[in-house]
Image 1 (tube, one colour):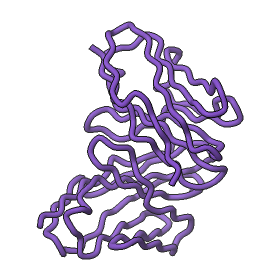
Image 2 (spheres, helix red, strand yellow; image 1 turned 90 degrees about the horizontal axis):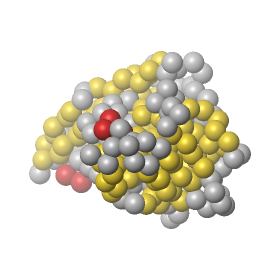
Image 3 (tube, chains in turn yellow, brown; image 1 turned 45 degrees about the vertical axis):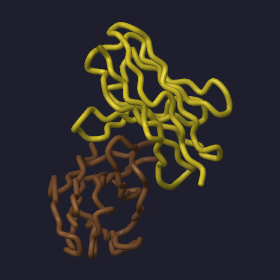
Image 4 (tube, helix red, strand yellow; image 1 turned 30 degrees about the vertical axis):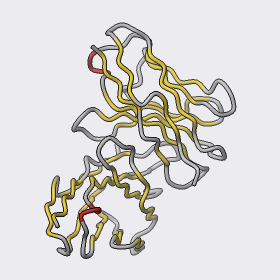
Length: 112
Length: 109
């Protein structure tokens, strides 16, 4: 069964550094998403992406965040200048035109 | 804004002891209610989608039902491998799911 894959599984970075989280969505899906989950808290929506542009973003997704689909298969989340409070699990998801989101197993980001 | 509230926060069951999880929601125009299972350190795994009141879906020991204000996930005769956090989410437009905080289920042998 096709699945969403994310790399790396764990990223450690110093405060102020830039990080890029990578995702390969399911190939025939049209919508792409980033969510995050701070330890012990709920899964929170960051951004959705459709037809090569952002379709919706949350208040969390401020100017330090950006998303890109650089080619036909990858979907990336960039955090320009990481803060301690950015430490979380970041989940990529994709979905067809209608139907459920399918999630990857996440990247654990630790900012020190 | 979409609101999703799950109860209880945690549920400890003996193997074979059936129970139900609740998800109450407030949304402007429901375009789907979704149940996911999440194991520690993993991403949410899709279980069910419900679209309209009265709809029911089943998979092995799990059954999901939907009314106009809430959804229930019934676990019948659970086994230890059913231990996980169960997440409820709603969609009110094309672009995102809003999640509840989840119910962590522990099934003891």
